[in-house]
Image (tube, rainbow, N blue to C red; front, side, top):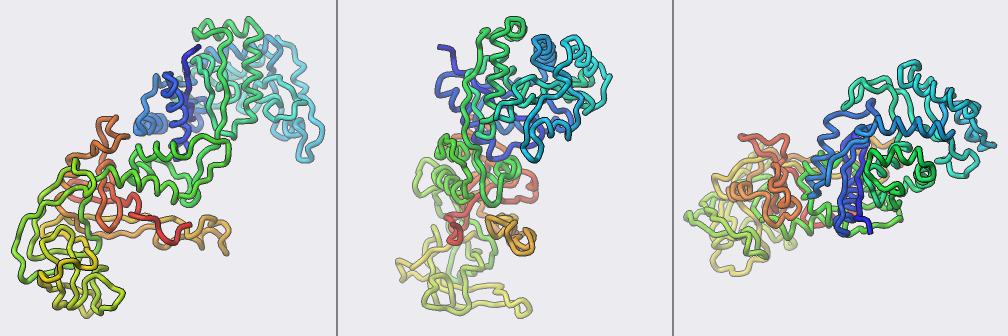
Length: 535
């Protein structure tokens, strides 16, 4: 039995999005399970859309997810080989040079009325004419769209992928890797199948959008197999079996509802989502041909579960207000990084006479259904020696905001109804960004007046003067934590790998772009629990 060989073949014309994560996990995971190998193959046949930054970002994202390609290859490595095979295809009367425009091609394929289909008259040209014109395309005798090479398939077949697809077109732009060497470039439909053969790919795993392409993929494979001249050229250069072809399998591409499929670098990685959580999410979904349009809340729930067991806990206050505890003395408390995992260790934290709590945890006027701090009311402080009772407060008359709360220890109350987080004097000031859905609904286009009327005014909420306890320094120094399996395999992580749970607030990570030595910015990864308003 031949070893399993798969490939992940992205076109380097943009950044990968979350849907690509499924393709990456399926291809690399399938090969790994069967003891095989996976190529990362850049499908770089369109220089008009491809840039160096996309090549780099794609490979970085594959490795970030924890996968190591057997090799990074490029369709452009095979340009000469593909060209030679195109000439062989012409010699077998299986390809011809066409000069039709878009309207003429559309008419040949039945037009808008889906009428009878007919083959282009250029298909009747002799082999010699087609070879001469194809070489003319190569040598610059034609401008873009004046000529292209079409495969001579079966215009009567019910599948549009057999209606004499293009194999080569003229593009008037130098290639990122081959420079000005070529004026003509192979199409996906011609390149994909043959490059799979060159690399001895045994399983062509792709999304269901390519189901119709299977027939053209197999047509080219069979043409190669059944004609020794065409077949031999490929095999002598690629060192594969003359009958090497892959098995096609399709699965539905992963798509999200609001906020849609943003690229993984800006939305997923920068936000601080661990690669291990992405892989775990894809594993939970499994492989299916059913449409995979997933609510973002389901993804967030997987991320939440992953973080709950892998990251340390710290105390953070978004909108701080000082509390002076009149009878307190400075003491040192030992705070565990996780109440459930002792292996994470602990850190020392000073309990100071002045502490800071979140403004939302204090009310000037108490009520029976309120269990946090209010005048003459007691609340517990996480990891603190005693609960505190508020005795007075001052406020800014101009803004109406509380500026200071004075309190005392309540040593009589053993079990306060609730506990709140706090940070001591000397804690670090940071900026916190809370990103919510860009739109208020999952179908913004259906909003009255258009999608702009569905924009969420709180899609980004910024707390410019939040405070984090100094235990953060140890968390940062130890990141990525050993429990974060995805990144631990990489041996290092960027600032986005500095993650923690801010107790009673959310899960956060350091923003790798806007953070500096003098300013630390946190992005919320995910809330502590699913919002009640989400479906």
